[in-house]
Image (tube, rainbow, N blue to C red):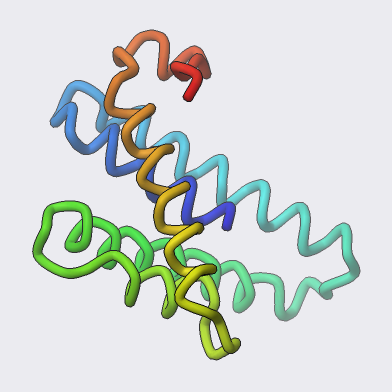
Length: 126
């Protein structure tokens, strides 16, 4: 879910074009550093941390692509939610609809935020 929400933020920053490119890169680097530290904290050894972080970055990239297509109307959102958030777990249509609606709500709030408030961590309330 962290990667899903980060993907929505990165897509919002992407919509700003070059004006927010450095912030998007910085946010991605912070995500990678945080995931590295979290994995080490839970006991993942040095030899495999990089492999796990690589998978997490791959998951972020997958969510970015799937959500970019779905939110642009090129693909439905529910399959992207099923594949990227629930993976192979059984999930009801009601659960998919709930999570999809919440993600759209976050996307809409991000879209409504100006760049400066967004970079300050301020989002309009639902």
